[in-house]
Image (cartoon, rainbow, N blue to C red; front, side, top):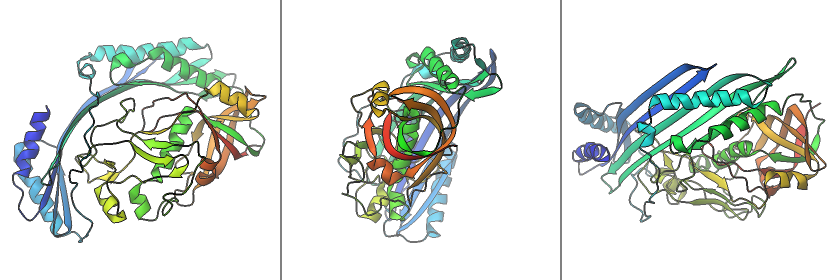
Length: 447
């Protein structure tokens, strides 16, 4: 398969002129999604996409074009369109394709043939098994909004006139359930996941148990009284929080003055216990990959080291604007030019599990879910405010469920106010790993 995609890219590169840089991205992917409801298949989709994108840089001008086809007769048209678009572009001295930087491409075991070879009927059976297991987990489970199985296989190549020649292939899958728990007139929702590279990696029983527990433990919730207190973020909430933090360290945002950490490299911005990395070379990460969107090797980028801001994430363009070097953090598909993004953000874990952290807190709140997180965070000022649900922590033990409260602070204060990090790392179908995280002095608004 890779040889076929490379041959397509090489053909286009062969048409490059001496006075231009040309980059060709060829991609192909398949995705399957199965949803079941009350013992039957509600929806089943299996779709494939394939296409080629061409970027041309000439005279400090950039042009881009793509086609959602790999047919030979469209390749020349895409290149011609990219050249034409470049003539209308605004000159930019920082434009230029990525060049080999000497960083070795990691060898990662990210592809499993079984994702394609396992019969669809077996994948349907897995989704049905998950739904049945959630219903059987607790008599208060009154329904399931969705029980699903999803997988994907992606393959891509990047070839350029500057010497880039990259090939990659990955697979991933997950099961997830979203049950409803009812007690009297009250209904609460929950969720549970299991993530892997192939269907055999998935733990249906664990996902079902987690989903049922998350839904039922919030029944009978009350609004907490307001005040400033210590909160423990559940791993799923921490993963979302870390995604927000990593977004403020995006080189594109920093260059545009849209990050609260612009101009603060080398400063202490978090508790010294905090080390935050983006490591797409970790095969446990759902979005792990060997090469970035420009064909450069991915690498372990340390964003915060011992509380100090070490670096921002960059692609080739944002790095040139900043006077830095690419961190192998270009993200894109064949239908777009490169952006910048984190793929596998994670905190260096601590020594204790969540029960030990809760016991050490004494009194506070375990935040099990949040709502409106992205809209409630200002990446420039750092203001942080989001709706939440969770459990009261009293005397070092989990107590009554809590609902409809708001937690508020600033990203700056929250990073400095981290007082403990758990060892309960969870890999989720997103760009960050979760871990229990204890943050003191957070404003809680309830009754």
